Image (cartoon, rainbow, N blue to C red):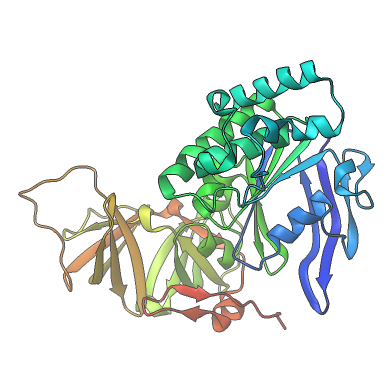
Length: 392
């Protein structure tokens, strides 16, 4: 088992710190993603693993082998770039065979290995074509085949699908997962697209300002964000800040001043145990909230609020509602499961009821008064820009 281990890894460009003291272990055979906005340091981190950037501080290990001072060609690590970097004057066959020819591999072996790789990426019938004669998705497959034919222990993918259209990206994600399962080596994937990272990764790291904000399985990060940045960058969320009024064995009650003093119940049996009077921020995903013009039956484990619809956005698979409750604005996703032509749709300025189970709120450890004081919100009260100041 040869894991990739990053120890105290940092990279400075002049006075700018692109990567800031990253410690991480990527398990052998894992499909791991670095996810974050532009400028967060994810590509610089990938380039240090590949050997194209020298760390300012820290080390990169593959198993027990220190890669930090080795040039890229000695690292048993191959990289696939966004622009594919295929040789335009070579056929598909020759592009894939290039690395083996540099190693002076026997011709018969080259032929067998190229055929094997082209079969793996389903491009065996395109072997005699040139890069300008095949599509973007096919070029990406050839880049993968060329990288894998040298049998690296780690394959690095730097925004490999960014140049493709949506449908082709979705198709190539499935192909990448199939190829990963077939070859069984470590894939490290860099993207700014949360949908790509969530769907393809065994684990992922959300990066912000050169640091890892959170790492873990995609469903864990989505359902249990540890920071406001993670909650907002992965999907959509509603933030509710307030004061703990009551503590019980398996739940607590939070009073929200912006929600006109409304009290929310939160399941705390598997979360942190705050004290009475503590200020907390909750994350509540829009799809967890039900919306109706009829008041639901009261239950001890259901939170119920009354509000007014301020905006409606039809999105095909679902409708998004912006509902005001006091000073709070809730974003609600209503899935289109079936169309009832005799059911009157909800309308602007209509009074509605919002309700959700108390296990669907998650307590974020960030101090809301340090974080939200430096956050720029849009007209709907949603985060546009996240700047976390140091706490005093």
